[in-house]
Every structure is written in structure tokens, then in C-alpha cells.
Picture (tube, rainbow, N blue to C red):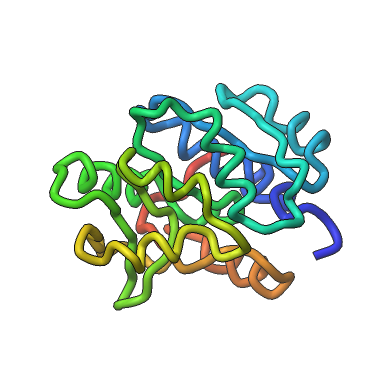
Length: 191
């Protein structure tokens, strides 16, 4: 994209600030933000948020390296929600629904889906921590989900869970989709 996508403008802030606003509005035990490319600039921009910022010096090794670094800063007894920093269309309603389904405790992995397609963020019970700590490559935790299908709960939510920003076209489409009520059906937030 020619610039860090986390710092692209979004509703008067940046994409990452918008994501953190949504996470901060929920009753989470903690948020760990793992940064790699342009870490110093991004960390400066989010310094006002009550999050733990950690640096992944090996970010070029893929998403799994960021998951491993982040896990080092999450209490062993805590569930882990893997949230992408480039999904500003996901609102509090969707995040809250995934957490509520997880808290019911029927399954150890909660995956958002839209019309049969799986998306992000994915929520893992602490029993999957050891597997998360050793994943490799740039596919995230898909292999863990696939290996434990019997313990996966799919939760039907909005299309937002399928939308991330990887290209200029993705960003432009996301900007169009967020106008009005957005994909989560939530009213547009000021600021």
C-alpha cells in the first residue's frame, strides 16, 4: 500500500485507532497490540490507549510470529482473541456477540462466519495456547481451527468479518461500506 495500513485515515482517526476504540469499549481483561513494520510511528499514534504494545522484530516471518510474540504477554489462564488491525468495519456488536457465545462455554474455539465463509477475529480457549505458541508461517491459526473442528462454534455475523484492508481497492471499498450504518448495522459513531 506504500504506507502502514494501520495508519490510513478512518472516521477522523486511523484504522487502528478505530479498531482500538471498539475494543476499548468492551469489558476485556487486556489488549495486546503487536507491531512490526513502522512500529515506532504506530506506537506513538496509539500511546493514549490502555493497551500493551509489544514489538515483533521478526514480523517478516508472517502472522504467526506476531501471534507468538503477543501470547508472551497474555496471562496463561486467559482466552485469546486474535484480532486483525486492518478490520475497522467490525463493530462492538460483533465482537461482543463472539465473546458472549464463547462465555456460554459450549466450544473452545469461536469463529465468526458470514454465509458459510469464516472470518476474523477468532477466539481460543486457553487450552489452545500451546498450539498457538508454535504455529509457523503467514496463515495465522487456521491450522489449529482445522485440527479441532469438533470444538469449533461458528457464529453467523455480518460480512465485516470477511473484510480486511490489503490493497488500495480494499480500502476504498471499506470506506464505501462504512458510510451510513456499516456492515455491523451499528449507527455511525462520531469521532
